[in-house]
Image (tube, rainbow, N blue to C red; front, top):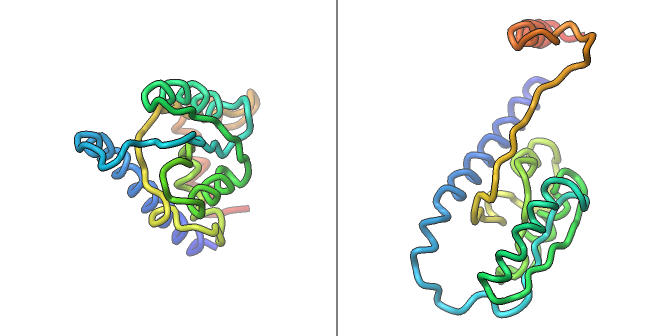
Length: 166
């Protein structure tokens, strides 16, 4: 089991590193003049999560700004499921003309470690365009948890559980 997690964690880390590198280099691509006018029709911004959540809200705030900048309508389409893998597969296997784009979260980089058969290769079939925002993550416990006091106590118990799982 440990080898499985190490292998899949490595895959997820490689995918995350690739996505991060592409996102960091994306601003450099805007310096060049495009060969053709883009977009030529409505753009669909696919969100891999249910309506009302933070990824959906972010996409709905972004869509009007893109519509204004591109002088084309940008619509948001929710395709929830499998931590955004359903939406990612739709975009990855769809028409690669740039009129269907994916808005996703860090869940995208974890997909290869979580799902054996994605139906697409996150590194080869999708390219990062821009980092739209960041979200803090919190580690919380119940009020009666033995690790509620501090991260040092949590780390101690996590290491013990790793060495001797129940």
